[in-house]
Length: 307
Image (cartoon, rainbow, N blue to C red; front, side):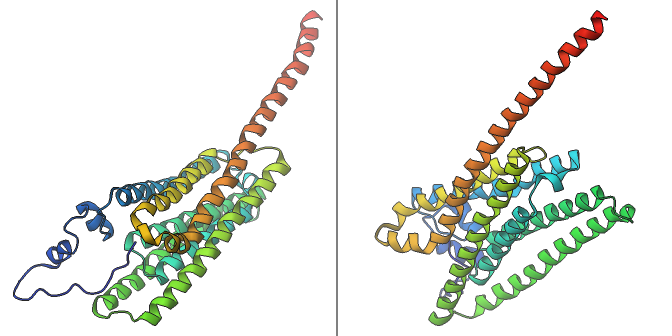
């Protein structure tokens, strides 16, 4: 996706609004995609790439909500989720946000990246709250208020500060055209952040897989968290692959340019299949244990009736 781009060239002798001038830059493209994403889409492959990419964003936006509900319901999120899993996920989303900002991605990308970081902060705060509460620490009455205040504070900082920087950056880019050297620096910084983000995302699954293996259980963990993440990673990777026919003679360069995000999406997707196997395996294990307990209790009840 292109960034904000250089200033729109003036048309001599014609008075028109900025929106009309923008529309003239993409007369044959999809109007709603151009208005929303500032991306000129003329090819059917590019069109479905954008649509599936938006589906991916929606999946990631709502991925954490089922886990937040399950954690609130049973109050044992500190026993179910691995702290390493949450911290690595936060690291991945945070470096993703930095990469989006440094490489001057579209506003919608930066806003969604900020939302991801916010959800991570909420999940980690919820984890800390139930960890402290279950340990019955002194002053737990004020613990809930402290956690709520902490979440509001973090959300405020992660929304207001980047938004101000984003607006300032867009205003500067509206008047100045970037030179070739600065483009190389920002592209390199984007690659570095992309690879770091991929490492965080890939590393986040191993602590959770290990914790599930140790407990021989996935109780307290919502499978919808991983199901939506799987769907989000699959659709994100698919959106990148679908654009290959549109780039034609630059396929190798396109793959190299998006390689960090392809590794992150499809790599995590593979690891989440192992997570799915654990949910199936330990659910069967739990059912077997329940049946054995029922068989053990039944003779005792029969003996009591006979006496």
